[in-house]
Image (cartoon, rainbow, N blue to C red; front, side, top):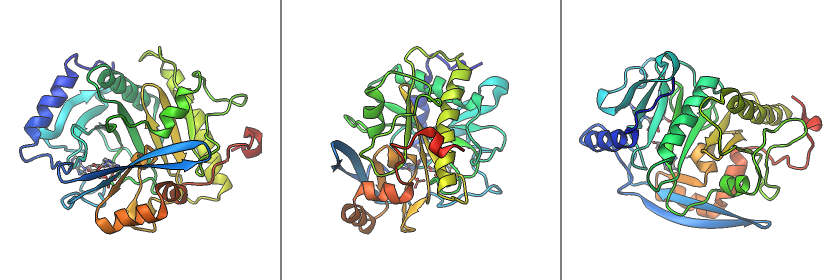
Amino acid sequence: MYEIPDNFFQILDDKYNLALDGHIFFSGDGSKNDRVEETYGSTKLPYQLTLLKSLTKRPEKGNVASNPFLKSEPELTVLESFGPNDEFKVIFNKFPVVPRHFMLVTREYKSQNTPLSLNELVATYSILKKVSSEGEEKWFAFYNCGPESGASQPHKHIQFMNLPKDFVPFTETLAKGSEPFIPNLKKEPLQNIDLPFAHFVAPLPHDLSNTDEEELSMYFVSLLQRVLNVLKDNQAEHISYNVLMTTDYMALIPRSVGKFQDKIGINSCGFMGLILCKDQDLLDVVYKEGATNILQSCGFPNIKGQSSDEYHY
Ligand code: AMP
Ligand code: AMP
């Protein structure tokens, strides 16, 4: 059901190179990257700040009527159909900053405000397993869910990108220090008490097979429950959160606003430590305010230390 062609990686590479000829607008070439580290308590938080010369062609906000994912361009299509009942397809991001940035999208319209279904989780995990089994890159999947999550397109899409070389996001460090477990009433998800923003991380078992569907769903639901608690306790008027996933962990971050001071868009990548600035002025804002402060004001206060029955949904 979730059969991915053996040569998926090769297909990805070949089609990407072909599509660069007029169909994909790669904006990584003109970008400038700076690595910074911020210290909170005994935690060092790594960031890569990316200054883009131009992202002008990319639509700031998509809409359902002119939905680019329903009839995607053939040149951008990696797999025409995928998953049970062929409910998904795999397409390239047309405006990538990182080469071969691709997405799993539903073939029929489904709202980006809906939580990840069992099939979507399994499809995401299967793809992560596949791309992580080849090459040197560290791949991650992300899902920007809800109106304040940083998403720009309303049609359901889960994205796949790889991390900059030698970059270890805080989620990875947190997950590495713990044995896999499904958070439940007895076991809390992992949270780093040093960080000012709420975040919930579950390390995944290494031997999780593509068929352990229900287990994946339990991980997701238990983290989502924590997110909903935070949103409720803060009287949020919308359900917005970011999902990060690798073959090693799943992380959810509740979101209060999509943009810092209405000008710097923060999506899931931001909580991976990857912050995109569209001009020098915005980059200066990040240096001045500090990346962690920016994440904090786009999220909610850390609740580490509260037991789960203090914040039952
Ligand atoms: P998000 O902003 O997280 O909702 O992700 C939507 C992504 O879709 C953006 O990163 C855009 O670069 C990408 N995108 C916009 N239009 C198209 C298109 N016509 N084909 C493929 N990807 C697109
Ligand atoms: P956005 O402004 O969030 O739509 O992002 C612009 C493009 O870069 C899209 O293709 C995103 O999915 C992707 N992207 C978003 N944040 C980052 C980041 N920090 N580093 C690299 N690419 C990113």
